[in-house]
Length: 110
Image (cartoon, rainbow, N blue to C red; front, side, top):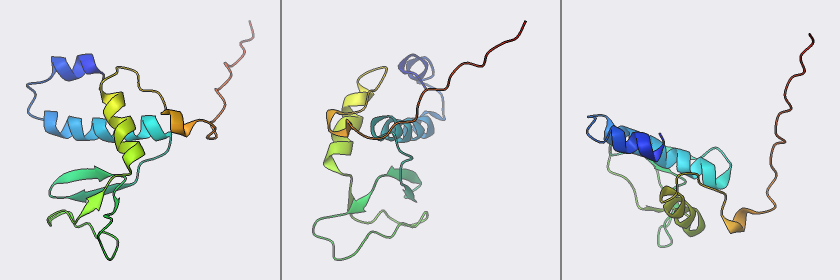
């Protein structure tokens, strides 16, 4: 949802769900990669990694409490920054990543 639509529908009872989905979309926009998605405590968690003091990788269970985890700082910072803009761009640390070429318009024959 665009910021305008988020504001327009702010009283919608489904807004908490749409905010979660928007966060996932922001993760995609800043990394240009499909986000790693986990689920716990009835919410989506994006790009979760093992906490520095953890002895093993987090195990997510949809019906359980979220395990200790962290989001990579550069991703978290870029997502936070992008949420304040209406059109997120890849962060500076992401330059040089492979990108798909823009599709060329189909030619038409009259």
